[in-house]
Structures are given as structure tokens and as C-alpha cells.
Length: 340
Image (cartoon, rainbow, N blue to C red):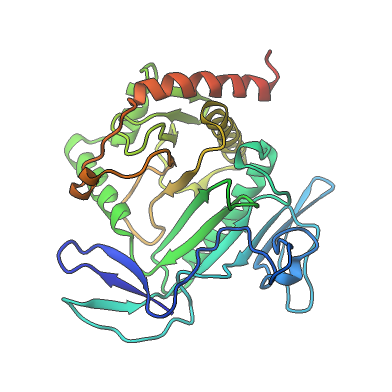
């Protein structure tokens, strides 16, 4: 069983296993000692029942779910409870007050299987990314209607050495995660002082900057001015938007294209590199706004001691990274849209 603990000085949030170790659910699970992937088509019975299975037939999308006795086997996207959840709706345990604050780690933890195949995220077609985003919208909307859910966190950790099926983690928290809370506070303070959104301003200023990567009608990709990781890039809606839940189908399809383009560009620039992809968005249960965006953090180097002071060192400038990513990503976009 896991628990939330808060640092008494910084109010930092930590999930701690209060028993034996909990393995992270990395999407390459084998069944017992057999060389069988439990997430492959035909092995649906080896996981817990899917809470959502998207099925595409004759141009129509159907939202189905499994039962204990029946598994949907013709899915294109599947959402299943994590085998090794970091949080649980059956969490129980003691509550303790400061200075040793803790509480049971209550929440939902799902894996969204983004492909029927063993493949790299960079090779997922834009059409399939659209299916992934539709499934993500569906599950996140449902989660925000549940009690005890203040924030739904969505992220992908990719490591070619141990990830077979590309997948996203969907985890809920009973309060806003500290980094999101800090970002929300900073953005709202800027809005109150300047009368405009800092990310909206950033989009207009970065349009012709050396950090600009790719733009399409509703989205821009760029390397941030002060990144925390080499080759870090963001995908940002051009219009002010606080939640990807409100995207239209046209915007979903555009974002899917952008994900295909940028992850393909990253692969063509750095190879099959480890990365984390995190969605920063407002909580549906908070009045404070955050211009939502996607951050991709390639994991190229080990951390430095100076990061213990909250200061990051990068030996590659975002401008240099952007010059390489931009070239590769624009070639990828041209290839996808059929321009030679």
C-alpha cells in the first residue's frame, strides 16, 4: 500500500510505499515466466477488464468496455487499470499530521495502451494518435466526475530498453500537484499584473525566434527559453485554452499530427532516446487557469548536483537544439502531408 507524504518545510509531495517495493508499470509486462506480453491483442484476458476499449469499424468509433467474462478483442486503444498502481481507490491507512504528514494514497491509476503493436511512439500514425486523444478525453472527463479527484495527471515515460507497447499513464490526485499549483499561481499572477496570458504572449514572440520549431493552424512547437532538459520542446495551443478536454475533433486531429511530427523529428535527430511527455493542464475543479500545453523532456544526461539547489545546467542551448529539431520536424511534416 502506498501513502502520500508531505515535506514539512517545502510542502513537497511524495508517494511512498509503506511495505515492499512497488514496480512501475512500464507496459512490457510478461505473463509469469512466459515470454507473453499481456498487452498484445489476443491476451486481453491476462489484464484486468478494460474500462474503455475504442473500436473502429466502417468509419465509426465505438466506446466499449470489458466485463469479467468478456474481453473486447478488436480494439484500437485500450484503457486498463494499472497492474502496479501508485494510487488506489481501495487505499486505507492512517492519517498523520505535521511535521510527519501522511495520508493514504487514494486515487485512480490507468494505463492507456496507445497501439496494438510493439512500436516506438515516433512511429504511431497521426490517425492513431487521434484515437489516443479521443480515448484520453473520455477517461479524463469521467475521472473529473469522481469523488476524491482534484487533478488528473497524464504522462508518458518512454525507454526503448523496457517499453514494448507505447502507453500513457493516467493518475489522479486528491489535490493539485505542487508543480502545477506553482505554475498556475505564476500564470495567474502574470495575468493579474499584465492583463494577458504569458503563454499567449510567448507564442506571438516565439513565432519567428530561433527556438520556433513547427506551426500549424492551431498549435505551435518550440524549445522554451529556459529549459530544464537538453532538446526539451513544448507543444502549445495558439489560442488560449485551459484544458485539452475542450478540443474539437479538428483540433484533436491537428494535435495528433503535431505529436507524430515532433516525436518523429525527435527520433530523427537523437535516435531512440528516452523521454518523458507530460501534459500540463488546469484542473476541471479549480477556477484558476493554466494555458495547457505538452512538454517533452528527453533524458540524455544524468542530473547534476547543482539541481539540488533548484538550478539546472544545460550544455546544449535551446537555440542549437531547435536548429536541429526544426530541420528534422519540418522534413517529417512535409513527408506526412505529401510534400517532397
